[in-house]
Image 1 (tube, rainbow, N blue to C red):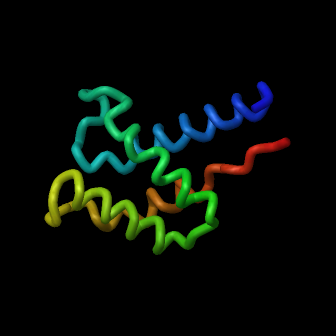
Image 2: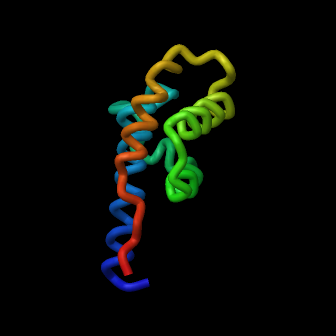
Length: 96
């Protein structure tokens, strides 16, 4: 991987991390917990984003992850679509 692609890859992962930690945050750890709280989910979300999914698909995946993390009861379900929009806005293309 060339230096430019590596920098782009790191920027993509950092952007996903920021959205998951600052906006999605189903465990309510933003600003009190470590920023890497949702790092295990970054690869899963990245792989989904590169397939150019709809916001519905992303929101459903986020909901599925939430259930895995904290169970079926989740009070912030309505914000999943806005988080999906933020994730879809991340340019996941790596330049050659």
